[in-house]
Length: 136
Image (cartoon, rainbow, N blue to C red; front, side, top):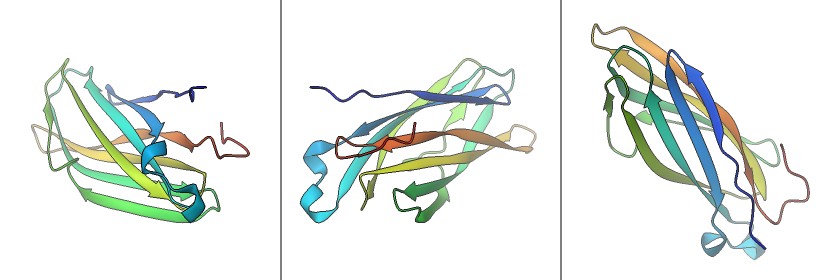
């Protein structure tokens, strides 16, 4: 039986961020309380401005309510520049010690004139087949 995967989207300043999380059974070890997810992110620029992604800020909350903050420059070692109509896609991942969690965050993007914009990443649920109760 397959595990249902959901997509989560949010648009800020004409930038749509869509996230699709996947539970990675083959990298997880439930007997050791080690659960791993990948998440695919698509960032689409539907605005009329060219924008550069400079910084990411993630908040990860595990099934026990423990909060982990992850911040850094760019995404997956890149600083994508998105012209109007362009998209950038990448895949990353996170391990947790619980069977579920929630992630959300934002990107700091800049316009050609240097103005900074905070672009929201939608909150999304990290669910595993070992979950007794899903967040969504």
